[in-house]
Image 1 (cartoon, one colour):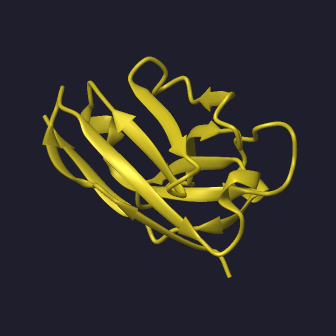
Image 2 (cartoon, helix red, strand yellow):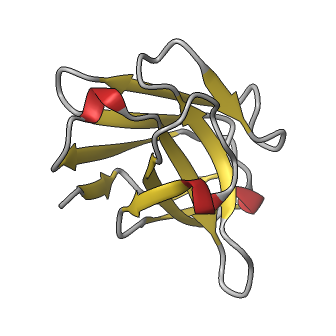
Length: 125
């Protein structure tokens, strides 16, 4: 059984930075692409970023491009999301997820089959 555990969320002022981490266990981490999503109450889960199994390819939502960076360490079974220039509209619960087997990085939550419990990020204005 795959387990994903996020950490690093918190409260930050607009313009600040946070780094989220996700520790994975349960199946060979380096074989699977990983993604980050976020969700606010009453809204659908929203794609944020994804990274290929090797780290050689990344994909970002337009809303975070240039501000957020996803990376991974296959030796440590972790994936991280560096968030800079945070805005109040970035406030959400952030989830890491493990991609289903496939070649292309996907933005649909349905293409990810394991999820963490989420970590709250709150950006004050």
